[in-house]
Image (tube, rainbow, N blue to C red; front, side, top):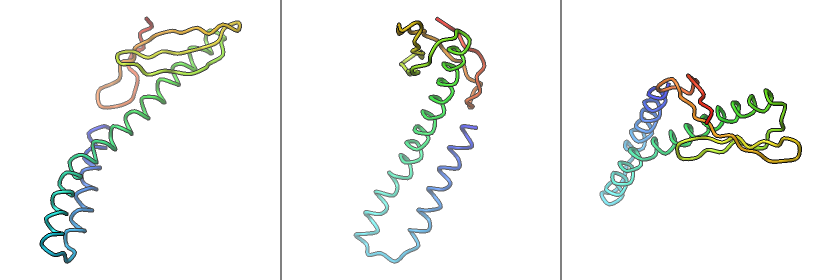
Length: 118
């Protein structure tokens, strides 16, 4: 799934650049367009993919946290994304508690393979 998204973003970017490159421009504007367009064509799809990846990962982590709270009969507060683990913050008998966990995804997708509670 992830490679398809990246290829689609690069294809869309190159298509837009190709359409803009066909316009009449002076030499100075053409040079600026080539420099800015070239850098943008490399960086913009990666930045967009990073935002998509973060959003989908947060959705999965929040779903896991809500499921954990339902199993324990606690009130879900939030799910946090850390460097190498995730944390679910929940309220149990008016006391805030935290539980750390790791998620292993199926490669190049956001499907959960395993959840490891720490």
